[in-house]
Length: 142
Image (cartoon, rainbow, N blue to C red; front, side, top):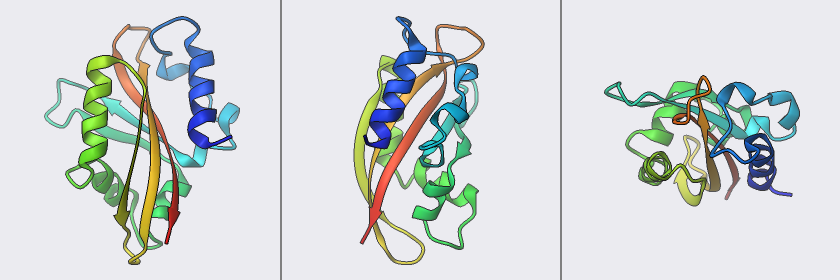
């Protein structure tokens, strides 16, 4: 099974007939086999930059090359270089629905990286509004 399928099944199980589960329900140990391919984004609409990365797995960091800081990767993924991720997160925030998308980029070592990502909404503090976005990315370099 692909990382996006594993993550979606886990999310759907936690959801249990709700729109989406709460961020506090995510247990990295239960998805330890894919956790290093996952990321977590905080969504705070009241801020000037409402989306910010809270977690990024080591496998995702390695997609960007060896000598890269996590902050650089987060900025490359979300601002402004990944228009696709930005558009998909905006659609998810409006719809509350999961999203799959793919794209490619050139990392710091000059490798082309093709990826497929999946993002899922999460609540915060039991509220029925999105407070976080959980995602995963499968990738190959060539």
